[in-house]
Length: 564
Image (cartoon, rainbow, N blue to C red; front, side):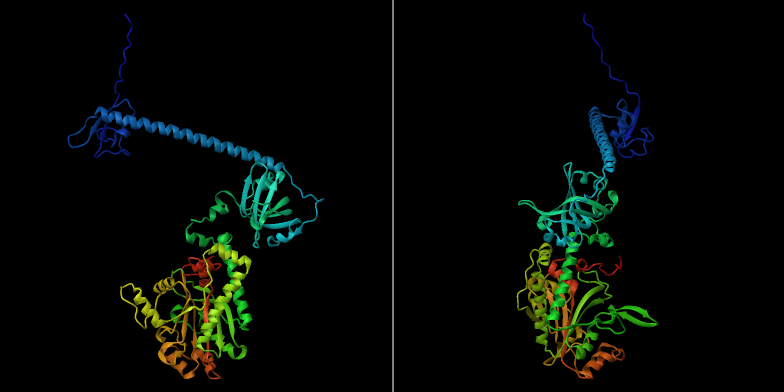
């Protein structure tokens, strides 16, 4: 007779209580007074060899069903399997991390033993800026700059994109050069001087300037941090905008921000070229004043040796005083507006291009503005490097066609009604009301071309603007509107009659006494004259397709922001 081995089930060693209604998996201990909430928690805490009493309703504790227990044990087993697999993966990663650290430590120790020296038998290197690279191809040069990008290829090659503010240059380090300690520990934004020969790239390969510097020696000038404090961890595209503003000093090192600033410099140069061509004289008015131009609510006040003074809102009044002595004049200066506005087209400090002209008519002013804008666009686009920047930033930019659309304020009110552009309360804009930014932009974007919006009612414009002789309700005024941005220029003919100006002071509630020097322009040889102010940052936002004017200046100042 064959032997039979009997298999017996283990006897449950403990009774564990589960209350699915009032139990607690975090504070419970499995007793009847302090039950767990789930069967899974009971198995996790007490093991599988237990007897489970479960309570689901008011009937009290009962033996768990076989199916429910089996399901819970299966879930528990699956969790255990996953936990084990995760533990194995973590151990593997830890081992790999440890090995990598050991390998890096060995590499660094080896790198410290490598000494690189300049080969004095080579031709003496010419010290150049990156912008001079093309003309120095085939020669041994010395270039200094910041490490803009860094890439290791294989075991014996390293590519460094160098930046010095005048351009970008790809440098290639090979052999001992890329194994030395300074190369192994090189990081983005470190400063370095590299010696070598600049060669044109063969067909099929690309790099800035279509050439690269093959290095024969280098010296690290200043090493930037790596790890958590690395540049790439400080400035990321998805970072909070206010964090990026706090770190604006680092942001401007990026390709986009630096392209905007470089284009800005060329645009300003083009403005000055226009005024030089037209024989305007540049003047430098004061920024600390005791008069207002655009209304008292937007003045930055400060104590000036015990007297109240303000930061200038505009240099217009001072420019007008220069007409008798210097003729047509312009200035490029900062203006300040204490507007508590958070719109994307407002700044508290902005670059204000202003000009004044004598012996002109309103149509002359409009023609001049059109000439100015088109000249600056043409001159800027004629510069190859700047044209490439504009292509990079605003690939869909097209030069505005002439003539610009000329639309009177009254016609704009009609246009808003015909196109169902309403106020927030659902009503239509009426003659005499200011047209705010949103409807103004909606109209401009829909029309899709530059607009000279003219002849605003005198009640909504500055006190000094000349009224139209044929219709005293409106002024000889103009706002230049650009698609995507809105107003970039505000201008007008100025009052040239002394008595009318004195009455305008009174209407505006302004004490004429501090303006005696401005009023005297109408006393000592008055003349028809006009001028305008152009917001450089708004002009750039239009030209470069920037979402906000804050991107178009070095360190933007607006409500709540006066740093860094």
